Length: 355
Image 1: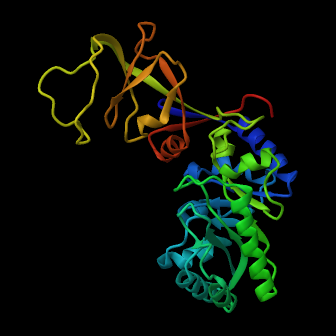
Image 2 (image 1 turned 90 degrees about the horizontal axis):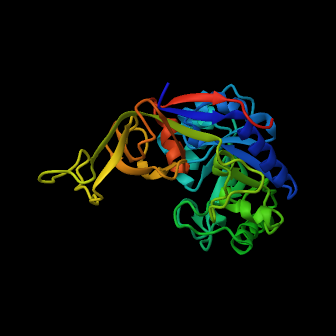
């Protein structure tokens, strides 16, 4: 059935094995970040046991779906105080930056008679979540250590996701300096030093990641085969584990420029369309309800995406294509996230390539 997302399980497993082997050489454990999968248990069940230390997701709803998978769970997005009970119930560890929320987690853990682990996040300049590294964080650590149902499992940072700041040996050494100050100030051991996400992998490839970083949270590199600092394909990884296939439902030669007085389109925008004369045009059964068209890359480079609406994708093509033909697309990470989330995109699991 179409539109469908073709998912190559063997290639995903090969990517996972190669990434884990790369990390092992530097003494680093990888957390399997599953947020792009929208709670897909079939894919996760084929990957989690290959050597990942944790399963990590941004939504409690997805962790609930994974609750029977026997691997420690991490909640990636900072918890809402209002969901503290669910976080403690379904996540072994959560990333945190707010003492007030950590106190709520402590209360929920006390009620559930559990100990909840946290990774305290530090902002090294990307300006998303975390305690700003130049602030005095020791009083916060002191308060956390007094909580009887909270365990400070580690510290971490996030880079490139908002400000585009590249992980470097220099800024990751700042995280290690924080670790040393905490351990020396309170005579404790910090077990997890999480040095970021797929954007830190280029440091692994170049053998430049500082010694002491012992965890990375990996999603995009596994699913699309690329590091996210510079967008380069990682040697030995597949970039085509996911392919979108959509069917042509109309194939006609039409003018390229609309005829008549132009107003707003279906999304309230004034169209900006270039007049290219008559052209071969196709309509695919796929729409903006499923994916932002800017996130798709046709594998046939003759095809150009022109635009579309909620349920229609319009392309420029050649007369070689006809109604019923299938067009194949690659996609970027946001596109994969949208396609996995859409219930209208059929998921087709295949096993091809090296095991």
